[in-house]
Length: 69
Image (cartoon, rainbow, N blue to C red; front, top):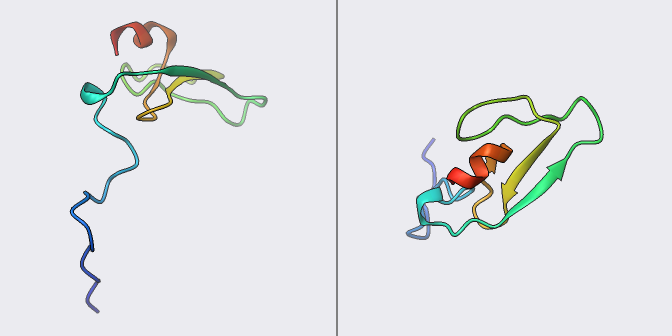
């Protein structure tokens, strides 16, 4: 079975932009339960009941890493 070739020049992994090229705009995401928790994408700390997510590239960071990103 042969897979169809991509029709555009976009890379296949377009879910997250490269953080180095993003002017981050962080918003807090909170979980109402203990089931959903996050780990920081930069320092890998966690699990956290809330996380800071960039509205542009969807990078998720803990509070200390928002200043570094």
